[in-house]
Image 1 (tube, one colour):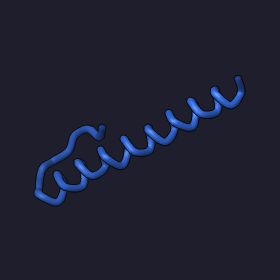
Image 2 (tube, one colour):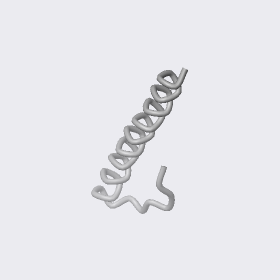
Image 3 (cartoon, rainbow, N blue to C red):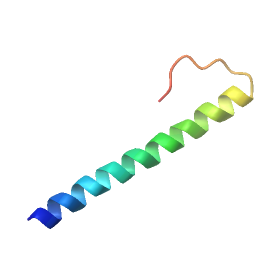
Image 4 (cartoon, rainbow, N blue to C red):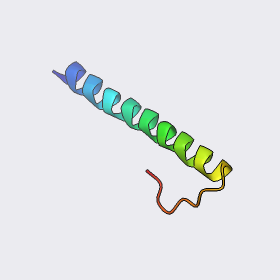
Length: 41
């Protein structure tokens, strides 16, 4: 049971990190092309 919980928590954390860097890529490209970014995410 604890293994399952650890797996789910690990998955959610890794997914969160991946989404963060994905959104950071959008932010970086927008800023690089002169677009004013009002909100991140």
